[in-house]
Image (cartoon, rainbow, N blue to C red; front, side, top):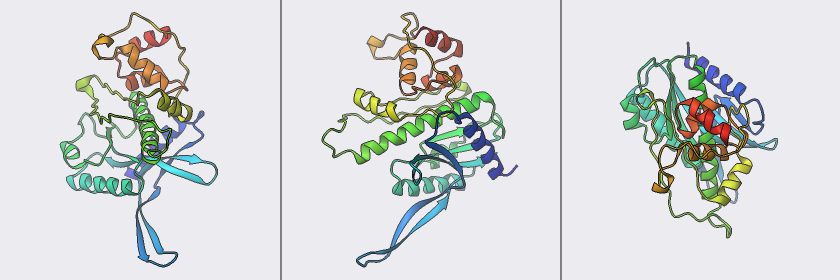
Amino acid sequence: MRESEWVEIIADRVRRSAADGNVDLDVRVGLKLPYGYEIQEFTPEPRAQMIDFETDFAVVERDGAEKWKPRVVIEAKLKSVTTHDAITYSSKASAHKSVHPYLRYGIMLGDRGRYPLPGRLYRHGSNFDFMFSFREDEPDDDEMQAFLALLTAEVSASRMLEKLLYESRKPGRERYTVLHRRLILGGPSVEEELEYVRPVSSNSRRDTESRHQSIGSERTVSEERSPNESEHSSSGGVQTSQERIVEALEVNPNGMCDDCLSKLAGVQPRQQVNQIAQAL
């Protein structure tokens, strides 16, 4: 199978999962995206041209019939990735981000079997925001749900970055004193656990929720609270399982399946997630 065929398989799975309600988000394959803007001559109207790279997989957000912006771009490699690949794709990520500073950029690997992410990606992929490895060329349901949860989180991160960058001078802007870029890992050695965090400001949360659309949401979870489910004491600064699930649901108002909620909240096993969610 060629890489382009594999990317189409992943894109089609995402499109089908996101078909209900996500009218502003599109998945595009082979999207040409500018990475530079060259001024050839200064005049009252400077003569210039955009230069672009083709991307493998992109999630774009539409605003009306003609306006759109890229939210997430993912490069793709089947079976193996070389040091040259890692350096090249990371350089592309940096170039694209220089034109679209709110863009989230990652790499996905396919048909890797049980091999983990290679160390060369950690070392040379410094401009990637995330990396994802599929065991086969046809992803199973668990992998797809984790991938959809990751895309949803990255779209939200892109929107928040855009707000931070372009509303920083507005009088009524949110005012932050901490920015923490966490390192989050998932895989068999950590029970496939993935965690995603969001801003804690109540005003920014309301603004994000009003525009947030989860990718691949399947159902709505009712809202009650159970006092019995916790892993650690929240008074000690560590979130309980219930608190993680509540936060995940707050930024996904359209709801999601138990598996997606388990991945997004970082709570295992799935049965525990179902019990907590049913009591919320």
